[in-house]
Picture (spheres, rainbow, N blue to C red):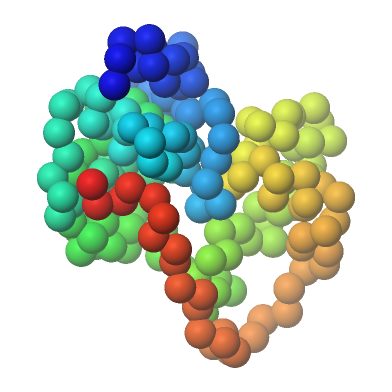
Length: 176
């Protein structure tokens, strides 16, 4: 990759908070809340591309994990390589696993309380982009919540999911 394209990539990351803070991706997002970009002819999650550009190498059998628990973050100081099992243990130890009203709904990232907070913060002047970054969701999801296309009313507690989770499409360079 040439220097011009590398420079263009880093311009899409907000590093204004300094070396210790999260550096959020400011361009497009994948539906999972991670930044994504076209890199070397393939679509990549932005934090993986940032890791590769900074450290120079990705091991094929490892994922790029966040020490900061912030999916849009591309600060190389917050990124490290680990196995899927390490990622799951890390998620569990930090209380990021689904429980209570989230159990059985593996793709639901928000709670009713978070949805109410999004609506309240937007009414207070917060931007759609800042709300998306804060909650680790796509800006379109924020707009759909605000327009009440999603989360129309408080969900009722249910048992386990009625249908199995959708398979994840592996069209991104997860394991390059």
